[in-house]
Length: 258
Image (cartoon, rainbow, N blue to C red; front, side, top):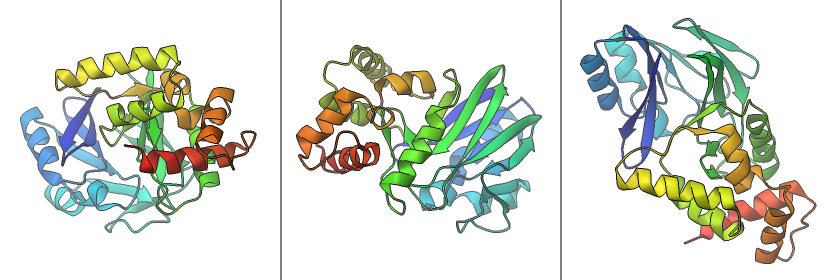
């Protein structure tokens, strides 16, 4: 099974899984890169997995469905181009011999979902849309800090070797912020060097790994004393013992960070 990030727009990745004959694509905001990949690889699109309703994630759905007959799956609580098979937490999707578990991860949007498969070529894979990024998390457009914390906690509890397939190449920007929060985090410093080298060669920094994100991502580390204290240093009203308040403060700080 081949896992490919298809670049789109300025910094999106449309993730494709294929076995040399059939394919799945995740969050196709643009149909063109997907159609080009299908033609170049000589594979047939069987399924489209959608995590949330934003245009850069669903803009190519209609064209791809009409061109290929692929079945579309998406969050039950969001407006996804119909016809779509609605999904909620605990549901499963079986396609190309793979079984994806649906995880509710509200925060970025109200009905955002993620897809987790525990064995793609013997290693787990997570398609998390805009909830979890390498070194960061999505903006809270529709959800609350409490919802985002619960969502990130669910994802952080997945196996450490899970490949994290985020939908944007935000890594270097996120790591600059993460180092402002934890300047002495040795794992973070090392990872930043690795990602800068990859980007200098125009290569993706993704997928990441859950174990790595636990070590370097401030939004998964809100209960770490250094991260909580950094949030309080930035906003003296933050209670460092309140993980929701710490996450809210970090997210607001990141929104303003330059």
